[in-house]
Amino acid sequence: MAGSGDVARHWRYADLPDVDLLRARYVRKNFVRHTHEHFVIAAIAEGVEVFHHHGTDQYAGAGALGLLNPDTPHTGRAGVPEGWRYGAVYPSPEVVAGIAAETTSIRGTPGFLSPVLDDPYSVALVHQVLRAADEGNALAADTLLRVAVTRLLRLNGGPLPRREVRTAGARIAARAREVLEERMAEPPALARLAGDLGTSPFALLRAFRDAYGMPPHAWLTDARVRRARRLLDAGTAPGEAAALVGFTDQPHLNRHFTRIVGVPPGAYQRERKNVQGDARQR
Image (cartoon, rainbow, N blue to C red; front, side, top):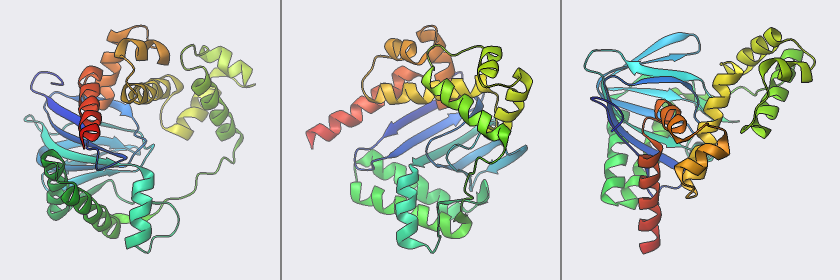
């Protein structure tokens, strides 16, 4: 459960390595601005999802897909009173690159060009991937995932532009990010961080937002949740993970984790443990 009227399951299937899976129905859910390390392929079955992406609200209704490239800041909320129901697959950049190299003519780093695509056929494919994973049908799940990603790249794919750190502001933002990653559990205050980098707090705020789509404190929360996910995947208890990434206590981890991932850390970890147990039995 992810809130009143909200139900979600976030899991992995051992025979689809480096791919996260999600089924959810959200009514009151309001995702804060966050990013994913993986691609997002969200297939809307009912209702409408609205997500803020590159300065504008995007609307994805039944029969459409929300498509996001890795490290793309976005939000998420219901676009109609009854909310939205969807299934999603989150393949890693390596998985998508491998499929693109084998089945498309895209050169460079592959990615999606538009954040919303109306294509009921691809929506059905995504839900078939989830069904096959639920049934333990490895051959079908792997095949259907490859077919879905190939189709979406052919309909809405291309090479992603290279990110080059050219301006002084971009270099300062990159250095600030490095400091926050290294000192995640005990980050410096904004004024101290800016002073250490030889700039002013407001100049750092502008540069960081321009480079990463959110202010440093929001980016840090997102990064903490990412690291907590990796710790939970490795078997670290939620309370210990909270301390290691810099949250005050487990309730703080629970709140931020649920606002970004869509499920509480305990439920997230239980699904991971189930996958590991299934894999050992094979």
